[in-house]
Image 1 (cartoon, rainbow, N blue to C red):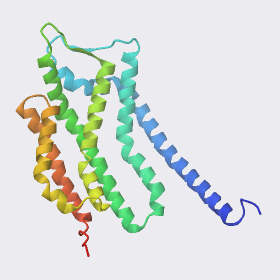
Image 2 (image 1 turned 60 degrees about the vertical axis):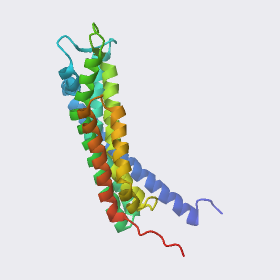
Image 3 (image 1 turned 45 degrees about the vertical axis):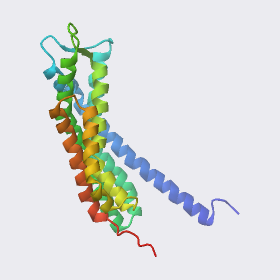
Image 4 (image 1 turned 90 degrees about the vertical axis):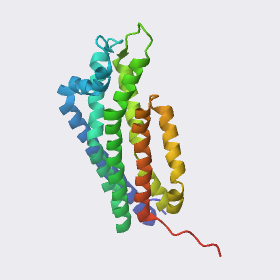
Length: 250
């Protein structure tokens, strides 16, 4: 009997159809990223200047960014343009992945996953914006103040890009806290009431983390610790919809 006949052949054909559909969706996402990247190329230098604004605004006169590699003034702005293209097209890329998996889900599953994805994307953007407008200026002012006497702060543009990228990514992920808490409650791994009972501990942990991460002044700690705790409260609010009643022990 042929291995491709009957039920085995039908399953193979179904798998091939899924792979073709996945390739098509990924191709759409790649083309969108490439198109936006090409459109941003003429503005690559301006994009880097905008990204570097939090640091250049904090530095004293005479401070600035430098390039320690010959190709850095050309390569680094291109990297910024590509990262911005990824950032801008992220919702479209997620939609393509969603369009691939959605037909295999039930209606209520599609509704819940759409809500999770919309919240996750919005919070990630909010986290990166908070980092750019609030955290980076504080950090660079702090670094400039603690520099030893006679040291002129002049950071390499490649190192600056790596630092800001990692920090913005970290804050984008931290801002996913409400979605993570809601998902844990939806899966039954954490009880909604437990999140409410441990508010005081969450508050303390948030400000302890802020005290270690933020520059050593009260304003910086408040600016970092307060949003972290508000994200915890938002997670409690999100998780209420998917809260499960605690199991009774018979």
